[in-house]
Amino acid sequence: MISASAVAAAAALLAVVPAAGLGSDPANGYGPGRDAVTVAETFRTRSGGAAVTYAPDAVPGGARVRVAERPAHGGGTRFVLRLQGLPAGRTFGAHVHRQACGPKPDDAGPHYQNVKDPVQPSVDPAYANPRNEVWLDVTTDAHGAARAETAVAWRVRPGEARSVVLHEHATDTRAGHAGTAGARLACVTVPFGAKG
Image (cartoon, rainbow, N blue to C red):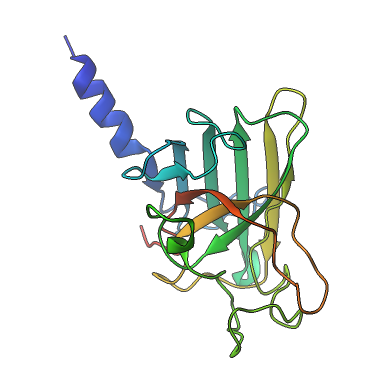
C-alpha cells in the first residue's frame, strides 16, 4: 500500500514537468524533439512554495494556477495561464518576470523582455509591449476561473525568465506607463526556457 506522504511527494515532483519530445502535432504547434514546461501550483499565503499570494483578498490562499510554455513552429513560443479559485469578475494583469518569486512582491524583478530596454524600469511602448514581453491579462468568470493564451515570435533565453506575476489591473499601453499593471498581488515560479 502506498502511503499518503509518498503520494504527496510524487505529486510535488510532478508539479514541474519539463516534457521533451512531445511528438509532431500541427494542431498545437509542437514539433519533434521540442521542449515544454508546465507548472501547476496552489497559491499560499506565506513564502516558501512555488506560488505565493501577497494579497489574499484578491488572490486567496488555496487558489490554483497552471502555466505552460510550448515551443511553436518557426522559432516562436506559446504561453498559457489558467487560474481557479479567484474572486469572480476580476481583471488581473499578468506578465512573465525575470526572477523567481520570493517573500516580497518585488523579488520577481522586472518583466522579461526579448529585446531589453536600456532604461529601467521599462515604460517605453517600443519595449514594453506584448510582442517583446509576455502579457497574459485575464478576467475571471462567474466561478472565479480564467484562462489566457499568447504567442510570441521568439524563444525565452534559459535562466532569464523565472516567474509569472499577477497584478491588480489590466496592463497599461500608454507611453510612460506601458507594461504597468498596478501592485503585484501574487507570483508563481516557472522555469521558463528549461531544456528537457
